[in-house]
Every structure is written in C-alpha cells, then in structure tokens.
Length: 488
Ligand code: NAD
Image (tube, rainbow, N blue to C red; front, top):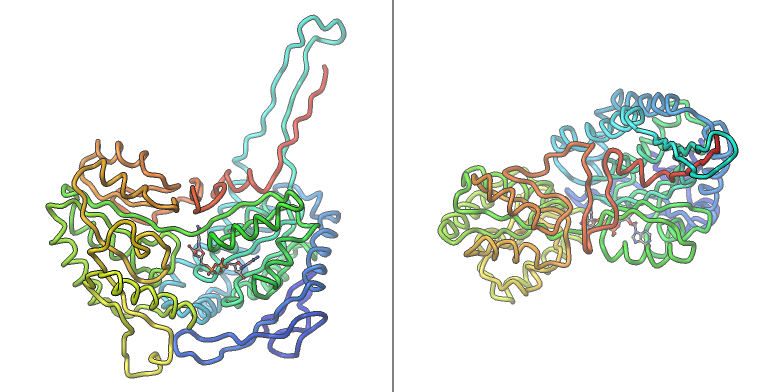
C-alpha cells in the first residue's frame, strides 16, 4: 500500500513508492507490533505539504461544497459509507495490521463503527431543529410591531482532525463525518503509527464524487511535525483532537495564538465500582472486558477497580484467575509503548503492589516473541495516592482496592485528575441512580461497559477533555449559529 498524502483530490507521489516530496522530512518505517517486522513506510509531511492541504481545503470551501444542501451532503456521506462497506475486508486487514489488534476486533468494532459514523451523521442531518422566534417590539410605530428572529448554522470552515493509534479510523471518522455533515472541509492527520486505513478512506472519498479538497490527508508525526504544523496553522478554523491529555495541552497552547476553537477527547483513568449486591459474575466478566479489551489500549478501559469489602477477596482472586487465562490478545502498539507499560509494571513492584496476575512479558515460542506483548495484569494493595492508581498507563492492567461505604466509593472514583468514564455494578436500582450522577465522569455505565448510542453525548471532564461529541453535540461543535433578526 502506498501511504501517501492526499491533497486537493490527488495522492501526492510520496510514500512507499518514492522518496520524500517537497519539504517532507523523509519517511518513517511502519512496524508490525505483532512481530516487530517492517510493514511499510509513512511519509513525514513538512510545513509546505501541510500548507498545501490547508489551502486545498480553503479553496474547496469557496467551491460547490460551500453551497451544497444538507441532502447533498448526507448523500455524499452515504456514498462514503457504501465505499467502505464494499472494501470491508481490506479495511479490517489494514486496521488489524497497523495496530496488531485481533482481526475479529477490527471486524466487529472498528470498521462497522466507521461505516456507522458516516451513516449516523447522514441521518442526523435531517433531525436538526432550526429555531425561529417571533419577537414583539413594544411601542414600535412602523410595520407590525413584530420582528422575526431565526437562527441558522454555518460551518466553521477548515477543520483540522488529529487522531490517535488505538482506534485509528473509528476515532478519525467520528470527527470527519460530522465535520463534513456540517459543511466544513477537513485536513486529517492520523497517528503516524497507524496511517493505513486513513489512506484507504482517502481512496474511497476520491471515488465518492466529493469536490476535490473537501477531504485532505497528511501523514506525519506530532511534536515538531505535521500535527503541530496543522494545529497551529493560521488558516485552520477549528481543531478536533483525540489523544493524550499532555498533547491536548500543547495543542491548546498553539491554538491560543489564533483563538482557534478546540474539541478534545483526552486520557482517562477510569474507575469501576463493584458493590456487594452486584451480580458478581456479570461484574467479573464486565470488568475483565473493560480492563483488557484491545489489551487495555482503549481510552474507556478500566484501570481502577473498587470493590465493596465483603466481596473483595473473592472478586480479586477470580479476576486474577480470569486474567491469567486470557489468550489471543494483541500487542502494545509499539516498542516504546510496551516499554512504558513495563516500566509501570516495575514501578508497581517497587511501590509494593501485590501482583495477582501477570506483571511481565508473555512467551509464545513463535514470531510474537519479537512483538510488543505484555501480560494482562491485575494488581492490588497500593494506596490511592500511588502513581499506579493515579496515572494513565494505557495497557492491560488494573488495580483493585476495597471500599467500605457508598460515599467512600464515590470519593475514591472521583479522586483522579481524569474524568472520562466510569462503571457501576449493583442490583440496587436506587443506589445506581444515587451514585451515577455523583461520579465526576462524562459517561457512567451501570451494569455494562462501552455500550454506545451514537446520538448520546460522549466526552470527558477534568483532564479528560473539552466538549462533547456524538449526535447533535458534534454538529453543534462543527457549526456556528448565526441569528438573523428581521423587522416585519
Ligand atoms: P498522542 O497524544 O501521543 O497522539 C495523538 C495524535 O496527536 C497523533 O496523531 C500524534 O501524531 C498527534 N500529536 C502528538 N503531539 C502533537 C502536537 N504537539 N501537536 C499536534 N499533534 C500532535 O496520543 P496516542 O498515544 O496516539 O493515543 C493514546 C492517548 O489517546 C491516550 O492518552 C488515550 O487515553 C487517548 N485517547 C482518548 C480517547 C477519548 O475519546 N477520550 C480515545 C482514544 C484515545
């Protein structure tokens, strides 16, 4: 696959086939996290390439796209969804290849959701209410003494979309679809670790009859690279970003120069609260899934588990046993990320944690031993203030601690600088209603995890983000209301 920049409706002659182009700073190898082999190259866009992409997006805004009807845009989104569906297996292969995640995960979660993102926003365009207000003007002697106010929404303009490697195309299209639906043009930069499905998306969009420049793609890294050039660009009207909290802070500082609006989905350190009255089997299976899906590399994964004292010992032992029996899991995205996760495993041991399961590197006696695997790990025994309990690790690891009362459970859940998601396990309906709204997180699941309805608000509080995505919330971010007042 030639993972090239896509600008103004054309793939530039970069990528695997040729050397660097323009002011590109070269290419970087794309590593297969399963076995450490090189599976391709990714170009590193320089400033000129990013400028060209932003200019193409700006030009496209002034072209036919700028005057498309909602109906036309919805039809365009549906053509994109159909184009991805037609190449479903290729997308699954590319996503699983870049991330190392099992094909089944890509085939059941990532790519169906990518298609769902485009279809959902095509449908949602018709559900948008427009507001009108009849305003009396007391004492006015001309006309009817009335004014009609109506509010229309206009696109923001050129939107920069920057996304991470864990759910590469799912998270990229979660922003691209509503941005296009609202009439913007887009310059997208996927993670340098996972460029393949975004490239396939550009191919699909190229055949979906959208005007050139409506969707543009630049590849490259973040700090000092394409990501930074794009998010600090003077001609970008908004930045939609998903990634680490520290990166969000850096992007915010850069965006401040041009007062560029930002939408941020950032890190998490998500808590699960297991009450003694819970269906323990469901809580165990749910916690196992929420801690170890995609080897813990999902922002919504549980890294802190708090269990009510009467069932604590039983729960920890059973969770450890299930974690030890997990097979078929994928690797960390990169050697660097594997090393980071392992450094936390060592830190846990240094901090005096009880290692209930895992804590090291698995041995497969095959090519995976050259890959970036770590063991699913369950820890216990650390104080709430320890770094393991406070810092996002983003690997297959959770720490389990006991609590005594409902108030204490809520206090422990909220004792975090993050506030993305939480899970409550209880069969007491009143307790569920009491506890859920007290938890400082953007999403609280009760007796389930990661059930998503694309119309609902999604996002974090505290260091976990700014703003909400999903349904009308995304369309609100990607458009600006304009009020028109007419005297009648
Ligand atoms: P990251 O912040 O390192 O990188 C994300 C993207 O930002 C990449 O495309 C990268 O090239 C780019 N980038 C990095 N530095 C930049 C800079 N200074 N300016 C502009 N762009 C820059 O994150 P990651 O390691 O790819 O992803 C893991 C993180 O993402 C975790 O913290 C995880 O919790 C978070 N995440 C959050 C959500 C959510 O919805 N809240 C979803 C998925 C992942």
